Each structure stands twice: as structure tokens, then as C-alpha cells.
Length: 169
Image (tube, rainbow, N blue to C red; front, side, top):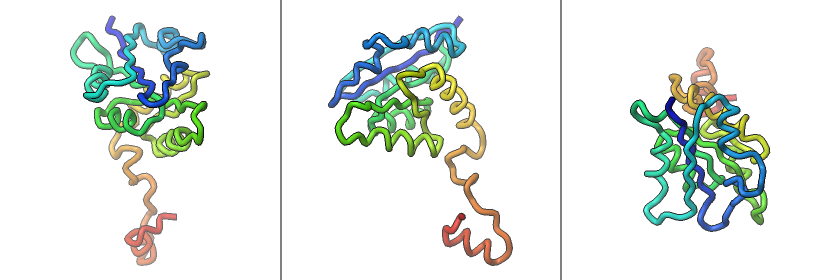
């Protein structure tokens, strides 16, 4: 049976070891198994000057030996952009211990727009299940974050003008 590759990254500037599961909470292997997968390969890197894209692409899965996986990351913008570029579902888990924490805002905004799954350390199983649902929605056409779903239906001249002017209420 093929295994699911789970790439975990915690950021380079403010280490987030709780995301690795070093604090004794639920492990990734048990979370992935509980989410319905038969195996997991976990790779984590804190800093690679060449970037994380090549490691993330391993989670994309290819061939008969690897299923499509997932990236689990702190809510750093660089890591999020790398995963989005590689078209891999990403679970962003904000580091709540940061001062003036912008990661929560970023995770909430991107999850609301259906780009990422906003994960929590306490519930990796749900986040992994949500990532699989996100993967399926991303394959639909039009994609959920394309804006098509939010467009107003043009009703007469007023509707057309509102749409053209960007008034989509």
C-alpha cells in the first residue's frame, strides 16, 4: 500500500517545535492513520537556503509508490506560497506564542477564501480530513477561490452595471 507523504515545516525565524509534536501531543502518524490513510512519511526542515519547494513537491505524490500528501506548516507566508505554487493542500497552524501574532489573521483569511486549511495543534485529524476535502474542491471547475461563486447574478441593466463596477453585494 502506498504511503502518504506529510511535509512539516516550522519556520526559520521563530521555531515552532510544537508543530513537530515534540510537546507530547497527538503525533502525525496517529493523526494520519485516524484520518483514513495507511501510512505517512514525515519530513521536516527548519531552514534550507535553497527553499522548501523541492521538499514540498514530494508531498504532491507521483507514480505508483506515493499517494498525494499534504503540507503542514506554521502560518508563514513564504511556506504558504511555496505550497500553493506546487498545488499541494496545506494545513497552516499558526504559532500562538508569537508576539503580535499575524499568523492567525493570515490563516483565517486564506482559509475563508479556500486556499488553505486553518489547522490547530489540538485537532490534526480534522485538519487532515479538511485537507482532503480541500484537494477535491480545488479540482472542481471553477475553483472555489476563483471569485465566480461570489459574483452577483446580473439582473437587467442595474445588475450588469453593478457587476462591471465591482459591486457584488
